Length: 361
Image 1 (spheres, rainbow, N blue to C red):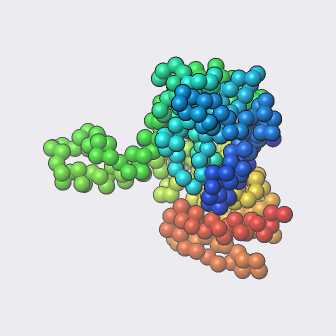
Image 2 (cartoon, rainbow, N blue to C red; image 1 turned 90 degrees about the horizontal axis):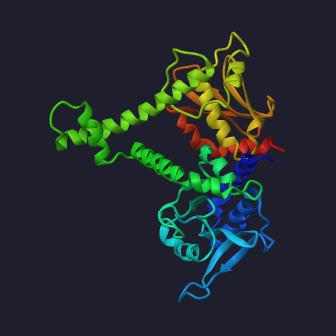
Image 3 (spheres, rainbow, N blue to C red; image 1 turned 30 degrees about the horizontal axis):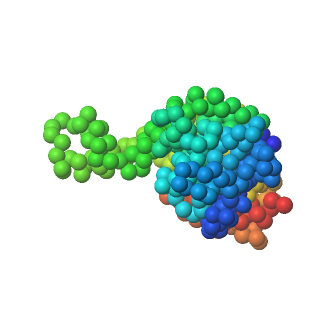
């Protein structure tokens, strides 16, 4: 299994089990040890590779422990501190990592709750752990651009020099992306003023600020939607199609074009393909992505398991003014749910996963 596939598999497990894990010990067993073993490739039962409850007395602090130390050639290379999966990570949780980082040979420290993994090094001062991570991996929302960098820390591909040299760029790019995302979600006064003063004729007053708070947020969302639509149009080789909801692009242009050419009397729209991608993303919590397929028909767009009409996951009724998501029960009786926006499909995630579970074995 490829590195990215192993990461996706663990991510699926985390999505399904994160809310059921309540303690730090359970987090270690369910998520952290599998990450060390299946993702990074180290033997968690070999003390020459992984030392649990690693101890290195620091000054007056005696007997304090770091949850795991990953060893290479008898030297500590990576320190890992764990917290319960239900809790948010805070830099205050890394006190042991700070102390141990300065008295071991470790150049990488990881703070994790099993879901989010924060990777630290010593960019700001030698042998002193930075206060901010250079890389953040969220298993509930994996940034594919980071996969190659994480693989450099695996036993098979360990390349410490390469990841340290890339750490500064990763640190600032990651921080900028998170800040930009935060501004799109909830723009700050500085962000609002920055754009308002560039398009506004006149003084920037309190009334203007209130007006542009809504306008900047709306413009940001529309900008993202338009960029997604442009990517879809480019991938599909079509133009002149407009819609308002956004979703991940199809996996490849070739697949999308083949789908569009399946039947010349059937018009497959971008909204149908976007809806399919949402249903597929939900279904992938139960099965591998390649098992979720679709077939378009004149009356509805079907999402199927294993390309089998006897295994309907959902039906998209998008040909009329009102859009509907069709879900079938165990007796294959369909119930339609009206949709105003494609994102509303996520509200039916449990029913979609239940349908997949009925057929997947």
